[in-house]
Image (cartoon, rainbow, N blue to C red):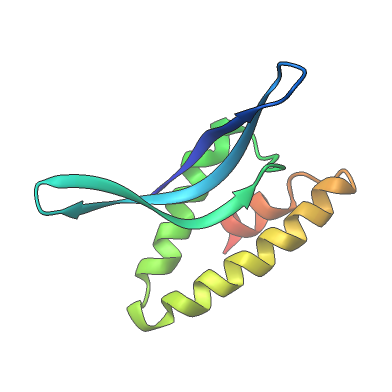
Length: 102
């Protein structure tokens, strides 16, 4: 599991636009494909240096119990939404501190 930055389009004024996703690699026969687990949108403000830690922690949570996977995905969606609210208010370390402490 990892976070991917994907170029979505080039704006009319020449700037590239990106979206961020949590993806996992899945083997289908002899091919390895990537499946999007969660679209993080275009305003994902966590520094790339923290992405591996974030992805690893999310994977730990999801592997904790297979039957709780849907619950954790919903929790992640809600916490990501709150995280963006904190980021817009200038508090960027909130989400990472929750992930590290729990």
